[in-house]
Length: 100
Image (tube, rainbow, N blue to C red; front, side, top):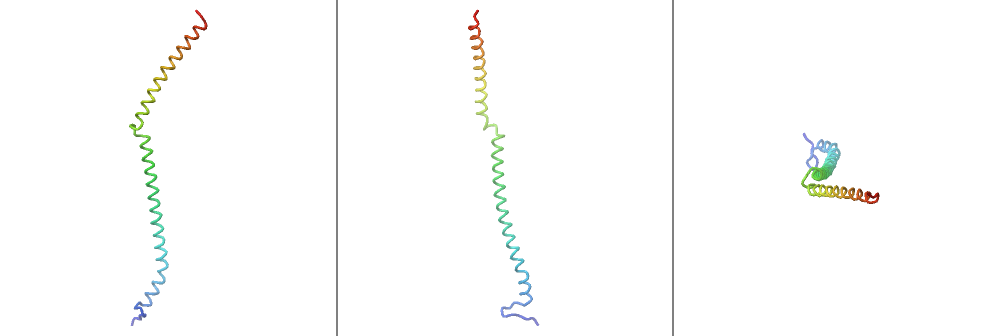
């Protein structure tokens, strides 16, 4: 006949539970740590992804750079014109200093 304790649990069940309970507690703790690590990794990956998206947008979206590039081209043309004028003025000045 089966022996039952006062609580109605068989002694073998109590033994099995006592043997496995520490392992189960450790397993539960490990699973919780894994979930925390997973959450941290997900947040890190999202930050990296957002950073890469921003970098991609800055580097490869031409519309963001169109106005500054157009302005730079205009300034380059103006600088070229001014350099030509400067060279012409230097040439004339040298001619005036040397005389006819």
